[in-house]
Length: 392
Image (tube, rainbow, N blue to C red; front, side, top):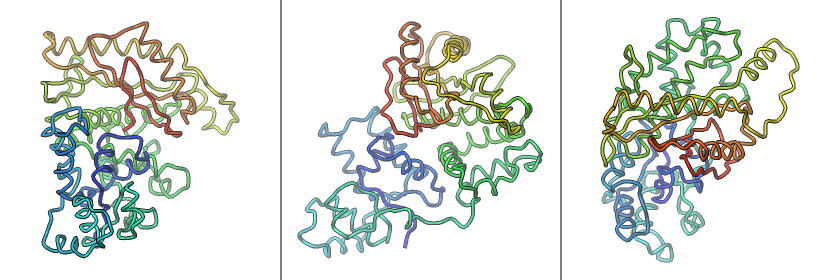
């Protein structure tokens, strides 16, 4: 019996592309599965994807070789071969069930492995031949440490994780509370899991050094730590976009971009900017921490200050990129991690429209812009004319 779920071919593709037809919760949980328990695909799925691409029924944003380098990497999935036992199981499936040979092989593999199957194929789902991946059937890790290996590696790298102002003080107790913290940290674990080992060993000590708040009474918590996590999100975005040889650029006396890598068309540089909460919201946070009753209101529009921060961030990023790459021999990307005062992002679709309108009046032709959101709780379809939106 295998505890990791098996993915039907379309689920695998949707997961890799962050397709909205797959719920955010499933994407986050697949991302967060530990390295020794990655989702399973049948090797027939590789053939299916290649065939769909050759027939023009599936479009990829990179070459098929580059896509497979990421999507079929051992840190992404476990590719299961077609064995004699699986082939024999195909012959035992009802003749009335699904004549597609690839689907029969996927179902047979799921049955032989005893792995729950994630699929939206109604013929498979209604056949009763496989076990669906449900909350009740998902494996329960023996501890938070097992479920969140990189988060706990980061905590272990700290000199004093129980410091009065440590992000990790009473960490496991807080994870056990029904506050939603575990869901947020599980999503963060999934983002960190996308880092290759060298990149993780680069980021981890920096993040560990920021896990004790230097300004505990400023209402901004562990802002520097979450700026580090923004860099990890940018790394994940680039990796999912087909970049390879990704690395964090070493810090020097002068400002540099944060990331470099290779895309199939050539080198890429990425500067990461985090737009944090306003001073007004930081002041509210201080008052809330003192037990005061604070009216938070409903911000249906973004503040001018946030738009100004974006404009300043673009200017600053272009300066760093041009200093590092004066002949512009690389593809330039500016990655913004957005933190709105509206913590629940209830009006995120309006915010993104207003930012898009700002970009229409302040165009950036030198670099591609990407905006990453902390959350999109209502799973709205978010698009922009002058930038990309990333929800990973």
